Length: 153
Image (cartoon, rainbow, N blue to C red; front, side, top):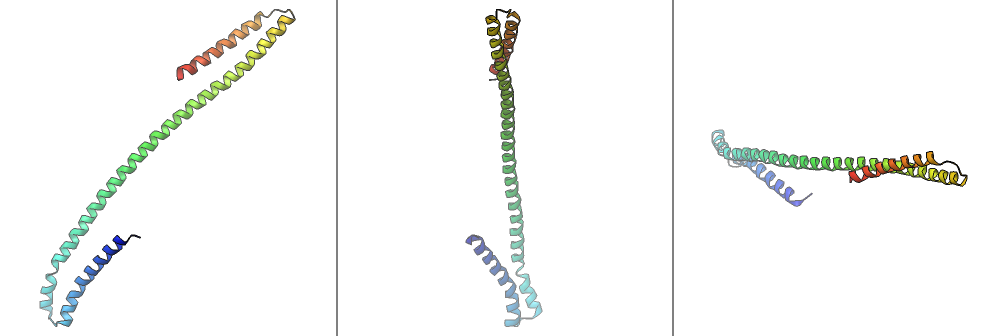
């Protein structure tokens, strides 16, 4: 705990206890009667007004500080929301790219098997026209995927 708030609290407590003890001291030490004591008590009305005003000022200050802190918190939440939205968008893009990458990998395997089948058909002197058509189809699919990836950049 910092020393400044403790010192300030001590000063306030001493001042308040002093204002309460003065009427008692005046009554019993100096032997004043109730009428004079009442007049003396009335003379401390300014102290009551002072503390009431300070309390009210403290409440106003507290409300202003809370309002400021709430605005800062709203700003931080808005920034956090924007960052989360950006992260979600990046995650969607990453998932899309991963799906396209998986599709490319699958097509690459199919293309390689088709090329191997074409070579085997040529060695066996068989007709490879249907295999070549399938290869062109796979290449077309691959080109579409690559074009869509280039467009998303």
